Length: 252
Image 1 (tube, rainbow, N blue to C red):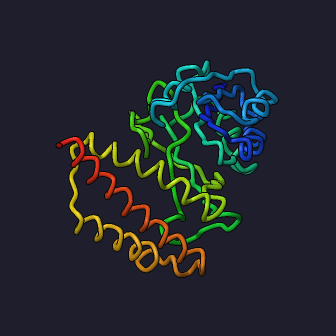
Image 2 (cartoon, one colour):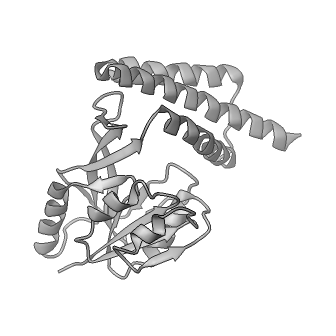
């Protein structure tokens, strides 16, 4: 029977890591790669695993691939510290592994994404699928600073039960993260040779709001749907404004 390694990257995740690790404690192995947390993250993590490595952060994709390299099993379940595997999904995965050789190279997992304690069902947040369960010989994260996905060589299946993703605790939490993620996105776009002007920057922000709130029916989530559409529009504007600023600085 195949065995499973769970890989998680962390940095100051004391508010999330306990519930995350509790949801995967049934796995054969848990690997944590930490970016030198200064809170209680590692103290909590040691209750669940001794496979803890510290490594300076150099991008989400690179950090996750390093975690995969430390896994001793051939099958990987890669999750983030603010995610939880539901009991139903855990059971589905265990049944899949007990059945013998897995027929796919990887599996997409469905996500329920929360803003605070509210499950967001519209605005493009649901249904959401990501490849997170895969054979490490056939799958690898893209080496990107942000928005890293898993590239797989082989057939991809899909499981039925959910990962719960508690992505933002509050508006303040979202705003604090805008600065970091927009910088990473701008740097990634710059490396790809992308350029942008102010008109396009403004249009992209406006279209983000229209797409989330109207086209993808974010209005059905009430006040939260409106807040998210505005916040994502702001995030889009800042991201492309930073790309323009970065391009101008490096050309001067």
